[in-house]
Length: 80
View 1 (cartoon, rainbow, N blue to C red):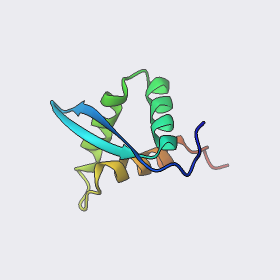
View 2 (cartoon, rainbow, N blue to C red):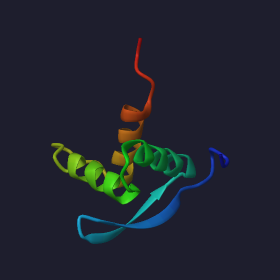
View 3 (tube, rainbow, N blue to C red):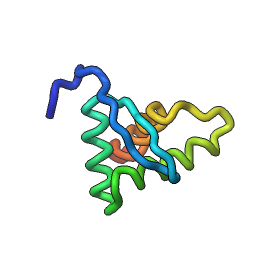
View 4 (cartoon, rainbow, N blue to C red):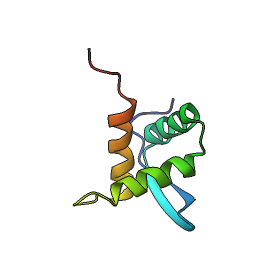
């Protein structure tokens, strides 16, 4: 794993039929790739799903923030 305090890295993805750029720290890109592999989908497909969920929120955050929150909520160990 890279330095956890590395600045965000911008990557381009096509989601919902349009191209977008997302800036995430390398740690979050790594977690996002792991989540996509675990779910058997491409990273872009997982991001599209997160995007669709976030826009349903009464106060939708930016996409990068939504990805970070999704990763924390969905990748943390279950509480005992």
